View 1: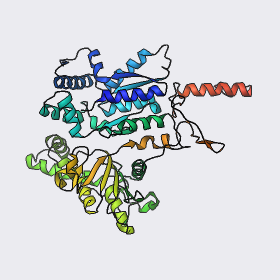
View 2: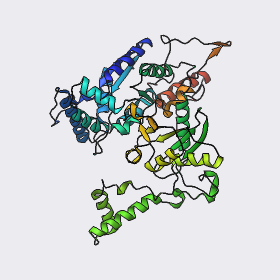
View 3: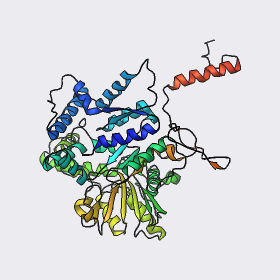
View 4: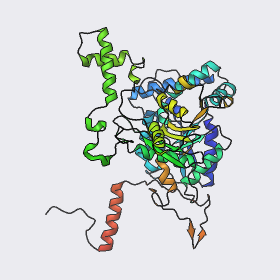
Length: 472
């Protein structure tokens, strides 16, 4: 439901200023190169075309047994364009659009720091309007396609929602300045030296940093609260609480009583017991393992598998709020940044604490926050603007994602070139036409680099320092 052709044209316009050309690859178009698919592909009407390509993409992934299959086809397409395996200089391969997290992982495995994933966010209202008004798709069908595009049931079907939050940069396509957002990301990629993080980017980076201190067995979640003026007033992570306030740290040593020390996830154990007890009411003759296996299938969509109240961990958002309470700092009017969309239990406390805005990266479909508190929560990416008044605004993060924060903002900690901002006390001149990528993609492997350095040392030292030693 987003006009990706327009986004692609904007990217191409910016890259042209950096003396780069683009090699556009539409992943869905590669489906026609796959032999043996049973799905009939249509080119019109538009709704039927989109639906048929979604189905064919699912079939292709299923037959290949790979969630990354379409991205792998794109890699093959790029490889065929190379002459003598040489890099295609001054070329950016623009792939659209990735539908499965395995595709993201494959491209990162191959291209590492040379791969940048942009997450393009648009409200449901805007996407519906685009499909209905511009593409001529009936409203009911457009809504179904949007829902299908976000996530499907089978493991190898498309899961856009699970791939989206893995992005390196997030764009708000509904904003009047979305072209400038893309330009800013391009400038950072090409090493513009004096671009610094926004308040949102900085706070979200800290939220992801806070998440790393969690020893929770299932996932790491982090949160940060800022004051109305943007000052950091609290951080939080999901972990087990300790006496005296706060959470256990590694510093607690032998007193550390987190789940990993006990060897099991308390919530998983409690949920399993409920599941087995329910299944015993159906069949009391099977052993617990059989009941558990059958129960996970039979009760998959009942909500039982989503139970969370048996966990010992304090949620990250709650810990951030409690941190403010322990230190006597007001949260009224503040902003809460969370690596993941808050669950419904945290949401009610966020509302009660007087938080005015919540910013998140990863979606959490199990959350019933909106179902239970639609009177007090406004979802910026799904609601209508006129519904926003007197509600806590929950909105997707926009900006440079935490994965690339140090690469693009740090002068010294980037995996790429160190940034210099001045020479002889004067600002260094930077221009798009002469700028180079700050974190360049190396076309050689670590073995090639070892060989290169070894040869240089041999030449310098006049010996066999860099050669393999023969067995004596």
